[in-house]
Length: 207
View 1 (cartoon, helix red, strand yellow):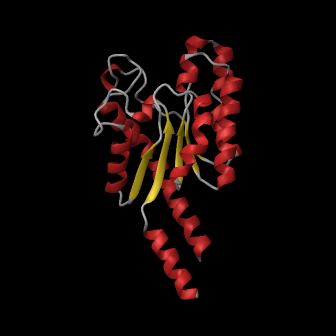
View 2 (view 1 turned 90 degrees about the horizontal axis):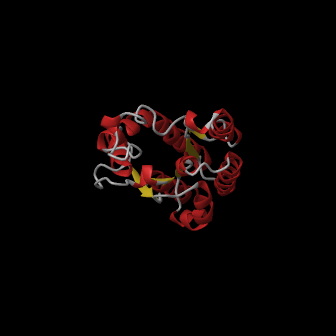
């Protein structure tokens, strides 16, 4: 029996880890070829680093945090091993009350926590044009909730890309292929660390 259990655990460990992208158009690949999209570029970068993963892109263009809450349950049917949670950009564009964004993010993190699914929270940063009160209420949402729910944390999804014309499409909002490449490059160390922790956790639970 012990040999069978060990063999089963080893087989499970050998399966590709399933990473779910749970975001909006920034991860869905709006305006991009499949090859230039975040999912493909992240998978390629992980493969170059020896990581055998399957990327499940459950991102929906135009989605808000409220939309994420409404579709979360059926999205989990894909049984992800790790979720990259990257919602909130459209909340900013619609100037949605940060209290609502916080409540929705917390609902999603509570669900992932209850299901035992590790999360990498990719934060967003509100533009100063929305005013100091909005920025002060919005920006702390991501680091505070990531800390509260013991999630991996990447401070700003569009770090180095936002506001740089050469890295964005003509709308000035959505990254082009080069912009996505920089997003992946900068987030990659955090993703690799999350996968390392996931592997360690899997080994401990099967040992």
